[in-house]
Length: 164
Image 1 (cartoon, rainbow, N blue to C red):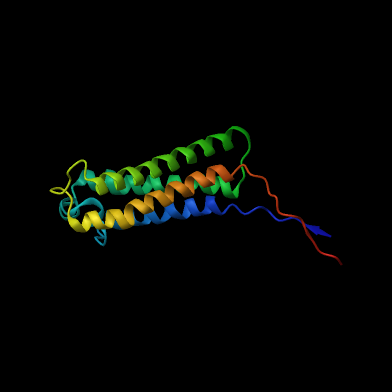
Image 2 (cartoon, rainbow, N blue to C red; image 1 turned 120 degrees about the horizontal axis):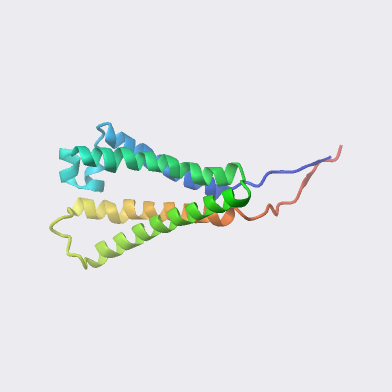
């Protein structure tokens, strides 16, 4: 008897989990949570919470993250074919690129201070952006990119054989 295993697509699930965690943080902040918001968005936005910021910056970003979580999950779990697979791969590549560039470019700007943000960015915000937020964006970019890259690879694992 031979049993075949479905290939595991860990990068797709990792990208999905990344987006779900990011969505959860935004929804937490949208309903009034404040842990981490001041070092993410700045003290001014965290304390005043203008309606536009809450709607667009928190609720909409959270919703986009949920949609984003669906894309690598579909690549990993359903193994689409044809045009659907190509569209999902392109979207994952695009999201991965945007996240990676966001993490790297903001890290570069803060480390080199070419924009002279010292008056606008607190030391706490600068620290957490350098050690948590930017690496988080880079990790998400890598996860989305790898999910797109690995979604087309074939299962090279040998068949499991069970002798009766």
